[in-house]
Amino acid sequence: MGKISTKIYLKAAVLTFLVFISGVLIGLYLDEKRVSFIKSRMDELEISFSNLALEEEFYRSVAINKETLCPIYISKANDLAVQAGKMGSYLETFREVSRFSRGEIEKLKDKYFVLNLHLWLYIRKLREECNYNATTILFFYTSVRGCEDCISQGIVLDRLKKSEPEKYMIFAIDVDSKLGIVDALKTYFNVTKVPTLVINERHKLEGFVSKKELEEMTR
Image (cartoon, rainbow, N blue to C red; front, side, top):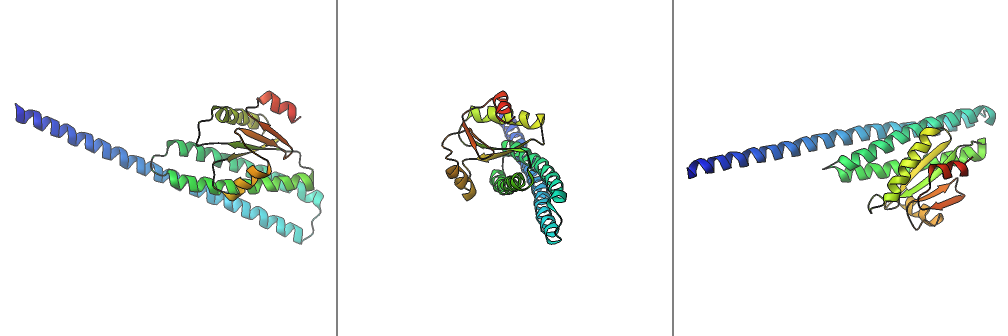
């Protein structure tokens, strides 16, 4: 009887171990696929940014007038904003479910931040040179410390963006990032708490802000 019980326990232990190993291997495989997917999309985004810079340099070299160029630049900026927005969603989703590749995804997230802030600077330039009327919102949040208001603010901003995609350009900035540009922005805008919103580089709002308040401010 004792030998039978021992065999049953051993079989159960082996089965449990095999199930555990299978789970680990599946998790590793899925994480590898996610990282590969993100890298591929990131490469596409980088190419889009490089192509935009090259196009702009070409147009300026052949002295095409601003009235002709501005609609082209604005259209390109809108397309890039859509592309960058999708990338941000992928990164946040994969970051939450990743079990083994968090470090790799964090590096990709930093790369995304840099590209996204290039887009913000480009849109600022379009606002000055082309009278582009898009509203830029810098959304400072934390992904490390528990911040329910940050989550709620993110949901509100998603709804705001969906309501008028070409009017609102939203750039989420993780205050816990080690990137120098993030420190520079926090210092320049004196960001001391989260969530904080900076609208068109002029208006700073600390704490949670409702969709209605944002719509009224940006009419």
